[in-house]
Each structure stands twice: as structure tokens, then as C-alpha cells.
Length: 231
Image (cartoon, rainbow, N blue to C red; front, side):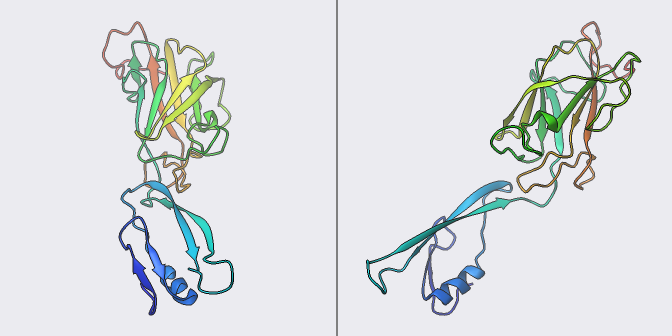
């Protein structure tokens, strides 16, 4: 909304110029609407104020400021797909006929990825995930992030890389995944650009760890392991 007395040039473009008295400009800025061409993005508005040399000494004077903008559709992020680095799908209880070099997690929208890899909610923070294997009792009891349950064994991650263009994190295990069952967890601490927690339960509400079981079985001749998948 343009305040009476102010003039606006460049509306609908990436550069907007508002001219007028201070009160008129402030009133116009109060009704300013930012329109993004992307559903999920982060941006920064650069603001330059110039008095055009209207008063005082020293000629035209300027002041600058920047305002960060995050665009989000309001829905929490979710896991869209799990696969191996070679492209094999990690369907529930799927049997992989080769040990994967890495696992990929594709999200429904861009995820929080600040500098470094130790921030809570960071998509590249190994602590944002869990990978466990059965202990001596032969079954996996852990079904949430945090301390493992029963005698489950933690399989560490040596690195997590993220490709924002395809919204995919690549998880590299710290050791070779031998033939047995595993449980992969994407923790509810993971967040999108608007800091909304992961919808791990797929109920369109923030919260809940995402859990998926899969199996490595290099001797399994069947295309999938559904019917013969145990603990």
C-alpha cells in the first residue's frame, strides 16, 4: 500500500524505489508484500536509504541494512525416499544383494544446513540420524532416536553430505554393512529452512522420528525380502 505523498518505482521487480518524507516511506514499507518465485527459499532484502542531499552538510548521505527472509509453505518436512547410493530403494524390510557404500535420504523440501555439521537440526549432523544393527539376541529393539534399546549395536556414520538441489542427504556408514538387518532413523530434530521439525510419522504434523528397517543379504537370490524377512 502506497502512503499518500510517497512514490514507488519498480513494483513487482527485484528492485523497488520509494521516495517521500520519512513518515510516508515508513507507512508504505508497513504495507510492503514480498513475493517469491519459489515455494521454499531463503533470501535477503538489501535496503539503502539516501537523503538525496536534502539537508545538512556533506552532500547525499546513505545508510544500508539487510533483512533475512525465509519462504515456507507451512507444512513440516517429511522423508520422501530412502535408497542406496547406487539407487536401490530401501523399501520396508527390503533385502539388498550388495553392501551399500552409502544411504540416501530425500526430503520433501529443502532442509536446514548451517555452516559446520554439529548444529541441532542440521541435515549434515550425523547426530540427526541413527543406524543400528541387532545385538546377540538377533533382533532390533530401537525404534526412536537417542540411546539404543536392548543389546542393539550402533553403526556409526563417518559423514553426511547434503545436496540442496535435490533435497538429498547422503549418509556414509563408518563400517561395511554386513549381511544382517538394520534400522535407519531420521530424527525429529531435523528441520526445514523455517525451523519446523521433521514430520517423521507422516501425519502432516511436526514431530516424530522416521524409522525404516532394511536388510543386507548378499546371498539372497530373491528380488525382495518381504516374505522371508525376519528380525
